[in-house]
Image 1: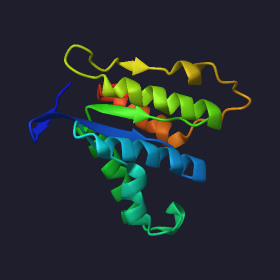
Image 2 (image 1 turned 180 degrees about the vertical axis):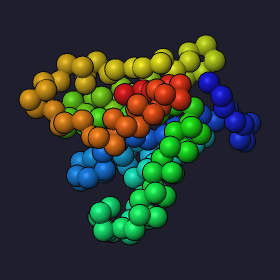
Image 3 (image 1 turned 90 degrees about the horizontal axis):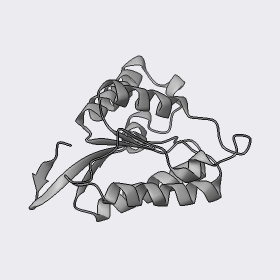
Image 4 (image 1 turned 135 degrees about the horizontal axis):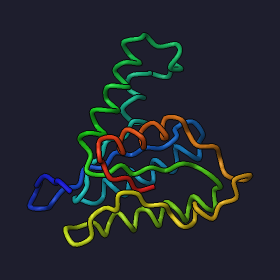
Length: 156
C-alpha cells in the first residue's frame, strides 16, 4: 500500500464509496467521515461531500453536462489516488450499524504487516437477508468495479 507522510504519521488515502440519498445513508457517511477526520493516519475523498458542492441542491439531471463530467472526473481521479476504497453498500439499519463499525475496525488495523485484503466482505453484510437489505447502489457498484480495474484494494 502506498502512503504519504504527514506530521510523522503514515497516511492512508481512503475513498468513501456509499449511497448518498436517504437520511440514514447520509448519517453513515458522516459517521465514517468523523472517524477518519479524528485519526491523523487517514486522508479521505468523499464523493458525497465533493458532489454536493457541484450539484448545489440540484438533481444531477438538472445540472449541466460540465457539472456531471466534473463529478465523474473527480470520482475516478480520486479512486486512482486512494490507497483503499471503503465501500458501504447499504442494507438494514441494525446490520449496517454493526457492519460499518466492523469495517472501521478493519481499516484501523492496516499497516505493512497487515495490508488491505484485495476484497473484504463483512460477515454481517454477508448474512443479511436479501429481501430486507437495500438494493446495491449503482454508483457504489461502479466505484468498486473501477477500484478493481485499477488494483485499488476494497473494503466493503
